[in-house]
Length: 308
Ligand SMILES: Nc1ncnc2c1ncn2[C@@H]1O[C@H](COP(=O)(O)OP(=O)(O)OP(=O)(O)O)[C@@H](O)[C@H]1O
Image (cartoon, rainbow, N blue to C red; front, side):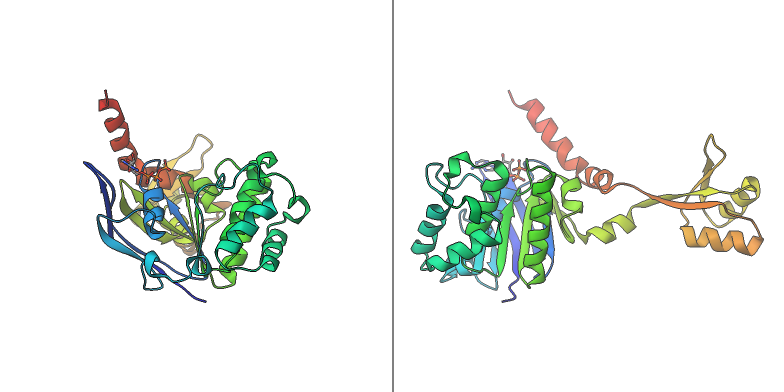
């Protein structure tokens, strides 16, 4: 079942625009991976190349070592939701899935299984046109799961969903990953990704900026430590000698950067200085993400400005 996605120097140019620029990364099974970047970063173009819908200018996107067009029964290996509105509005959910199943040699029993899995059994006979965005998104996922694929790709699945919808997507994707599947979803919003994914691949202007875990990202960008002590002057001197940059707040608390909380606690204990509070303050993931992608976003703003 385990199936890896591998991009090798994947590149797509449209005239003068390089939408995807020598992108190389791996997406591993068993975890939920987020594919993040500002609008226009190249996420959709990359996903469409993975699915054989766009031909790369150069490089390749491989799923389990093969290009999408070399996969014999694609729906059984890769399930994708690129657009929540892919189903015909006049059709019922069950008819939509039954057509998809039939054209891929999948039995009708599986249609009912996936409807059950996404919680749409009760509305299976209703017209898709009357579905909410959340229901359409569930239907899209049901279609992607029809062939019991090892790889699941979703383009902006949480876009526009309410809190309950996001929670449902999150638990569904986690369950799929826990079964050993490779799950990749794109988004331009870090805040939504932070609670949904384990790993993040961040791109800007078609290039890879970061390939890391959400936990690492939080740790790496831990900013400073707030310290409360009745002997602030003494502790400031001590921490400065340790190489920290220390400032004080209007309340008399200290903000120390350049040393971590355990080092501050140990130094204070060794010197017999009481500590009343010791709070590491991390930048929010959203801050970090915006900082990382600022250059790409600025570039876009400039390009837009220059457009007639
Ligand atoms: N068919 C096309 N012809 C010309 N340029 C294109 C085409 N498709 C995409 N682009 C350009 O390629 C770049 C990447 O677009 P893409 O849609 O892949 O970004 P994205 O990260 O998915 O953005 P969003 O978050 O807005 O969906 C953009 O600059 C876009 O204008």
